[in-house]
Length: 195
Image (tube, rainbow, N blue to C red; front, side, top):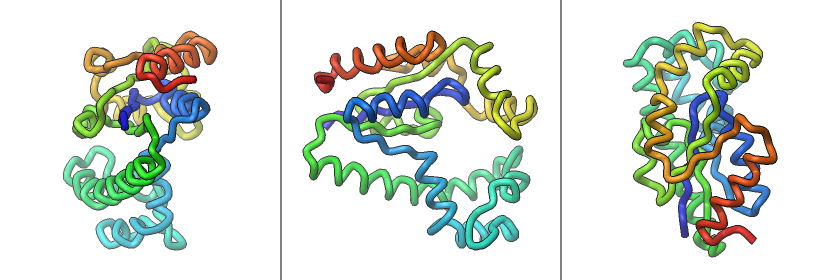
């Protein structure tokens, strides 16, 4: 089974690209979606214990959690120590199911693939990218996004040029949906997984 790691900086089109792989029949494990599920379930009491006042109705409230961890590397490490093992357990369950189903290719959508060493858990890395101006427009168009928050997120992420350098495959999402879809299928064909 070939494990593809999909990554890309904020606003580069990673989630949309993951859906394109899924449309081609590739099972996708989305780390961000897993975190959302954990924040509404198993992780909530653990996070509340570490960061009191950050949950509402048994779910983590990201707006309440954010001031505790943004710009605070020590607090971020504490949060990651709670969340990362839970995400990894979910990822392993996904891989076990895919293996049992005899899947030839699976995808793990991991936002900080290179930054966290996640690339060591996959055989192939795919990076989605676009021009910096396109990225900025996409991100600043999001609700509740500010220049300051965008810059803080970028500072935490590896530079796009370095991600591109490390990638086995690159998908340029700045040219629109149809070209990105063709690039997805070309990668799957190269990996002998596209019909």
